[in-house]
Image (cartoon, rainbow, N blue to C red; front, side, top):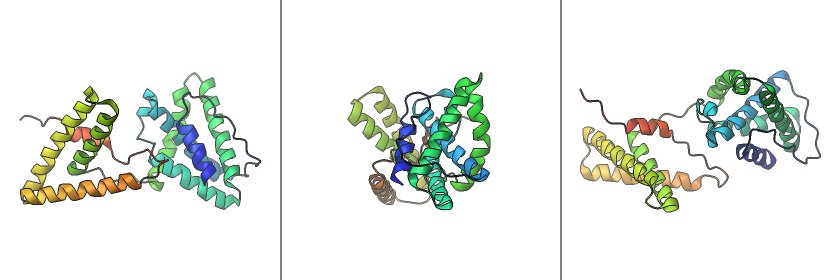
Length: 234
């Protein structure tokens, strides 16, 4: 599936909402059933939204994060349709590219560009939830560790920047609350330390095993930020 993954990465790294150039493929798009075209249209829409989310487009940020789940749907759907149509990766990639171009052309020519994608995304989100269910929200402990990792990454890149300090503060708050939770479970300080170390090692291993082409963490950072909010005073 190298060509399909390359197409997805090209779409997600786009810097403007213009139709992606057709790849130089010596192939013919397969004849698709209505259901197959709808599935590929969803895959294309997810790629567009993922690209816009990475670029901070406000309308795209209203959707659930597409970078990870959208990628999974895109690749699995394309693989399935390659098999169902007995065609090549290149042929399905060409079909996907055409659908993306059509969607972006319709959006460009519309008085309501976001509305064009919204109309496609509404039924597609139902397909996404069925095919790639949302993972359970991260625990307090997982959030503490992921924000520590985010802090380390930002600090290595930017030094002691305001963003790095903010992440450090959030990570510290979450670690403290995670330790409170473990204490409420009856764990001793040493047992809490051990659980923290084991969880950190497991997350480190998972992140290191992530494909070099996959830069999308599967953590719900918005949930983590909510967990770090000041406690309500009663």
